[in-house]
Image (cartoon, rainbow, N blue to C red):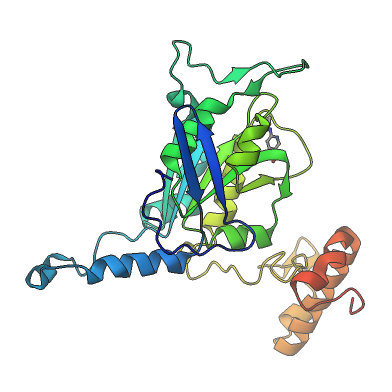
Length: 304
Ligand code: 4GO
């Protein structure tokens, strides 16, 4: 997003890619966004074709530097909240494997006054303070590129679903902008954001936890993030249904018996039982999933 530069052939997806005119103090620039990974690969291939010194090709390492599949930048007033959760488990491994390049930025680093001011009173009065636009506009201008998806975290956003996580996992670059105080100046929403997400219908002190939830949900979907034993396929929500009951050894634990069918070795029967259990559980606990299920998968309400 560094000006009207050589954006070249820009494909725009219907939902997220747009070109908005941003006007800031002393700057007017177009933001052109796209989110297709194949575009980036084409770009990289294009660059490789322009390599002018074939004799030096041996300098390109065969094993190469780790290929980063996704970059995530986070803009927050509370960077310290991010140390810990993102340095454990699958996210740690994905970062170490070079699948995820994750960077946390302090919004105050984009202020210029002595007090590093990031908030101000709302016009028209009212309680609390708002995040002022200047630091956020400056940060987004410096961190976002043509392939970035700029996402605000706020309770008024679309509610995060597994479907949205899968969509985000296909992006090249996410820029997660965490709300604080009473929220954002509306111009941030209008001119900077490609999307606004919420992790549920409740209010938190700031957007750091929702950002971490999104990072977690997306990272485990990156190709190569999960080990061989860890499956992304057979889980809750992947078929729009809740998970069926699962058991491990012992078959009899303090008199609590594992359902006989699971010990039978009859795989067709087991499959049928699991499917029935998943449907019954979804009907009982989350009927709202069934109402929408015809949109996302083949299981319909009438079938259930
Ligand atoms: C996001 C941000 C809740 C969510 C937030 C959520 N609370 N449900 N608080 O995802 C504006 C003021 C946003 C603090 C922030």
